[in-house]
Every structure is written in C-alpha cells, then in structure tokens.
Length: 460
Image 1 (tube, rainbow, N blue to C red):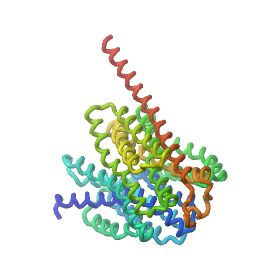
Image 2: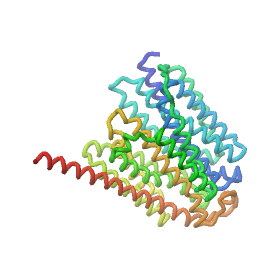
Image 3: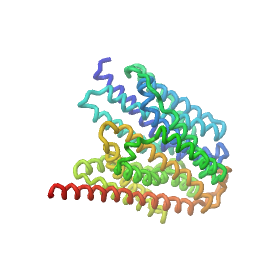
Image 4: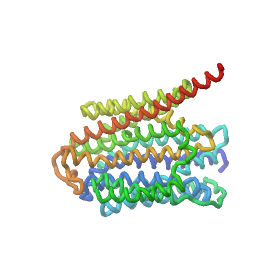
C-alpha cells in the first residue's frame, strides 16, 4: 500500500478511536436508569460510573507524552485501544455496579491513551501542507461523537443498555487490525516517566468525589488528610508546568474554563435523569430531546475560532459565549420548559466559548509549551466536570429527598419527584459558569493596561 493511501487509512483509524472515546463520554448518561434497575443501585454508585471514566482518562494525559517517547506511538496506541475494547466487554458483562465502575475506569485509561497518541500519529503520517487539515478532520470527529452519544445511547438502551458497550468491540477489533498494518513503528527512547503525579491525583480525587456523591464525612475527611501528600508530590512533579502558572493569561483563562466546565456535562446528566425518571420518557425520546445541545455545539464550533482569527478580542468572545450558554441553562433550570430550544442555544454558546479559550491557552507561550498547555487545559476542564457531576446526588437528596444508596430512584413504577433537584442543580451549574466571566475580565483589563503602558513608553 503506497504512502498516499496509507495516510488516509491512518486518519480513518485515529478518527474512529477519537469518535469512540467521545461517544463513550456521553452515551452512558441515557443508560444510567436502566443500569440502576439491573444492578439495584442508586444514583451515587451510578455517578461513579461516569466519574471513573473521566478520572482515568484525565490521569493518562499527564504521563502520556513521556510514555509515547518510551514505547512509541504505535505500540502505546494499540495497547490503549485494546484496553478500551476489553474493558467495554467487562462493563457489558458486569454482575454488579462495582465491577462496572472498575471496568469503566480501565476503559477511561484506554480512552486517555488513544487521546494522547492519535494526534502524534497523524502528524507523523501527513506532510507539512496537510497536517492542519488532517488534525481538523480528526477534531471534528470528537464533536460528532459527542453529538451521536445521546441519540445512539437512547436507541441502543431501548433494547439493552449492555449494547452501548458491546458495539465498541467489533469496531475496535477492525481498527486495531488496520492499525497493526498501516501505522508505522516509531523509535523508542529511554526516559523517566512521571507516574507519581497522576497516581497522587487519583488517590486524592477518588475519596473526594465519593465523599461528595455519597455525602460521606468519612471520605471527605480522608480526602482532606491526603491533601498534604498530594500538594507535596505536586511541588516535586507538578501536573501543570510552573512556567505556565506564572503566565497571567494562562491562569485567568484556565480558571474561566474550569468554572465553565461545571455547566457543560451537568446539563446532559441531570436532564437525562429528569426525562427518564420524572417524565417517564423512553431512553430514545430522552436522547432526541437532549440531542439539540450537542447539535448547537457542533454548529457553532468553528464560528468562535473564525471570529477570533479575524477580529481578535478573545476575551469578548469568551464572555459572550459564557453568557449565551449559562443564561439559557439558567432559564432551563428556572422553568424546565421549551428545553430543546434553550439547550440548542446553550450548546451554541458553549462551543463559541471553547475555540478562542483553547487557542488563547495553548498558544500562550508558543509551540514549545503547546502540548503541556493543551493537556493542562483538559485536566482543569475535566476536574470541573467531575466536581459538578459528583454534586448531582447531593441536590437529589436535599431537594427531592430520594435515598442515594439504594435503587429506589430507578425501581419503582411511578415517576420520581426530582423536579426541584433538577431545577436547582441546573441553576447552580449556570451560576458557577457565569462566575467564569470574572477572571476573563481581569485578563482583558491586564491586556489593556499592558497595551496602554506600551503606548505611553513609545510616546515618551
């Protein structure tokens, strides 16, 4: 097979893995009520099924660069894909919720590996004049995967929730076979791998999220007790480069991204439970209603980048995007009516925010720190999502008085009164996202002050 055709096979393989990782990040939301009935498990345990995937995929971003250098892109990529499909089968065959949580964690590791390696593999396969186009196509697949997740999940769960994981297996086997044939083996280099940093993150964040999800003082105390160890390890092996943390723009826009992420997946999670457990809609009906949120996101995805490239003023686009997203989530929470329309507008605003914020962070110190800045951004965004998702059971207990540890939220025949908890959770998420405007405003003022000082010096 010549190089011309080979590079397109490689793009197809990496695009497939990116899409599968994206689909699995959203597809599970529609399955949670059915999984709760199967496992006789309540909302807190089911929340951990979501969180385990995000924790593991986030942790793999940290040592991913060093591991690629040591083992090579091809070997590491195939290992990640293999873990992804084996663990998908494990989730589908899980006899109880604890097995499902463990296998989802392994699946997240596989997804994190694939995310770390697919871009370097594409860059190796394409010549300079075609690299940007290839990466752009691969990036679109993430948006498409996120878009497909609710619809595909709703359709498959109608038959059996296990199908949402089984479908990964034949696709993954074909993709691995093609990867073995077409992806070239690259050179392996010796080097130290930073394992302590991601391990310390997992050890600290797992009891923290369990403590929040179960409202367990014991686990929260454990997380506090582990915090000094986490800080000590981070001082020696930081998750985020100190050079980046000394840059004001990186700090301000990253903080904005962290706060905005509280709203992004909170919408899908809470409304999928609301539609299925309160309104008693089918998984497919719920998926169709939620579909407008990622649809608005994928439509506006290039617009924010185009506006930023043409006019600059990234802070203004970021603030405008947050306002559109958060205000419409706030309206959804207050009224819980015309939900698909407000979700579409909110999704549009969310992606309007993402493009300039990502560019401003990843380009802040040039190409040398681009990969570190990008990974750091994903870590912070995922951290915000994890905290936000873990808090939904708290709202269900406080405002709907539903037991967290047993499966009655999914087992009884009548609708579950989670109307108030859904409202307040969406309102809370929207308000947190709105506070992201504050650090971006500081960054804007800092830029203006810096520009005015430069003008004064020139005039002098």
